[in-house]
Length: 360
Ligand code: ZN
Image (tube, rainbow, N blue to C red; front, side, top):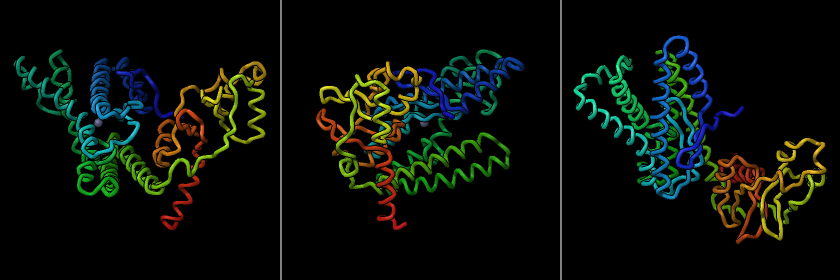
């Protein structure tokens, strides 16, 4: 099952809803129809605030030339998936602060508006989100921005913003590696405390956030380990050479033959020595068997090419593969196909280096 669903895009960045947000949406929708329509207003408000928060991260990241693959929205925040990690701690710091910073800016502006409308007392109590007049909406907007900003910034748990700020500050002193080691350790402790608190209070959100933080921290430290294991290894050391490629005019019938014979699940598609696409078993399996003799490779191949170069770091290629969710990367130097690097090649290297470098 997929865990998030695309709903649109803003500034060219795909926006996805995490399954938990979809479930919340359904629940609130049913609730708002049956009991109280206000619930729907809260949801739209939360959706808007979280999206703007993530866009702020994205805009700053782009300023440093870091592309954003997608924004995933969760009920308590979102994740802007960056194509690569910021190369300097200072950049990560600014990207991380941008989200909560925007929330604080919004809460400041709405506070000013409330003041000018002589409605300042509406901000108390802070945890009262009831709406009985239009002006209450402004007060709730203030509170949601303030709480969301504070929650994301002041909990020093990777992968939350506060954890990124914490890691980048540590990295300025200790370097990226040691900083991540410490930050992910602390994040796991915070996650466990959140989970226990969540069970005791009880508060389901807290348990959910704890789960999310824990998984995120495990992922970050695993990524770091892989970086360490693959350090010094280049794509050319692991790629397969003498690649079997196919022609776009080949029929799927013929492609199936090649797959049977060569036993690879994906092939680069070349024309006049130039790489124009990649065709995989998945592409083949989407076409009914009866049409294989008619349909050609060029019609089903994927043209959205994600490639690497033979001189690239293996750890970088691993990150590219993981983020793109593909099984293999064509290795292209100056327009010429030099080889193929598959996920299997990388995983094998990681296992061997694990034995070699960690001794078990
Ligand atoms: Zn954030």
